[in-house]
Image (cartoon, rainbow over all chains, first blue to last red; front, side, top):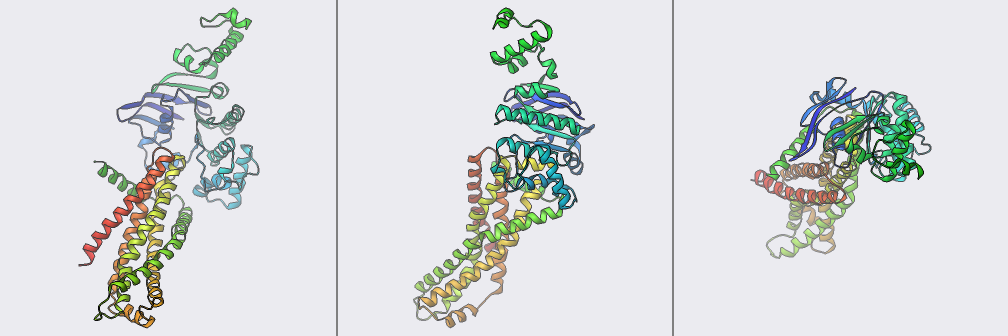
Length: 270
Length: 246
């Protein structure tokens, strides 16, 4: 279980995280959402240990990550898989070598065993005949899938996903979202996704944390988000008229009424 | 203050390189890869530079030695000592600072900017040990070898230029090469080669590893690393000469 306790992080005079406390739900998709500059990327980097918070604790199974020794940190890191915004595949290695890299580094398996595992995860992310291709030869969506394959090849306990849909078309974004959700359930991984894609929020958000100006502003599930009364969250999530209409239609469908002051008659006629 | 801060970060990077490898085999593979990139990759330019450096040095020395009292075989002596003491270790290392240094800085810079270094960190790999140390070790192994090759080729280049220009015969050149030979000069050249190898690899590695930003910053850090490496080589050259050639 990942518990974040009152973390603060600043750069010079600027405070980016201002006392965030949250517990990530095990075996679920935990989404961190928020506008650009709300501190979600810094928050994720603190969680995975790429940044050290100025104050507070990041606990993995009750162990404060930042107080652990180098060897213990390494052990926890080997339980973490991460998909980066730009996929972060190694340019000079083929797809097969990229995915095999963690296996080469941390296992004593034979080449045959490693290749079998690589093919298993490639199949799991629905990629075929790409073993010998270089990252430069792949599309954005394929790179993300290879990134996911590399992240799960060591059977991690935690999966961190940073902006999985950035630069992807809506259809590919849905495929990636679905894949993340399926892998989370199938492997019982605690997944933390950093996104501002509303489709992802509604599709895979088992547990959603809304960040606003370095603080946790709201926490709930994708079912609760429709009925939330938080003004800032509503402004962020249902920013366009289209999304406001969609929200009202969903509320109407489920409760028979709309909660805000919009004209219900006009909405239903339209 | 910035200079001290940067120097402190540089020392911390060097200190951070020393940890137990996660997998010896992978580190060895990376070391061999870097030896190939740095050593074999730079061999061509070193051969060309060294040959012409020796040739020009022979012709210019002969041009200045107009006294009938000084035997022409002195040209060979001067070429030998200049090449061994200065041209092979210093000039070649300055060229390598450009060739190898910019490659190291841009490679690491690109890995940093595209989050490949972060990806390795998250896997639990000490990136300073896995990415920086093999580059420095490979430089320490390969660059002194290149300097030795350079010195030999410089002397051969001098001989070919001097004999083909009719300045002196091959026998005269060989006589000159063997007279007053000081083994200490070779030792001094190797001390310089090892010192410069460390500077050529560690300074660009520092700049590349700590890049922040995008493509523009990678270019800037690469240029800065070459400039700082060259200045450091010249400064170290002076210090070593002052200390070891008394």
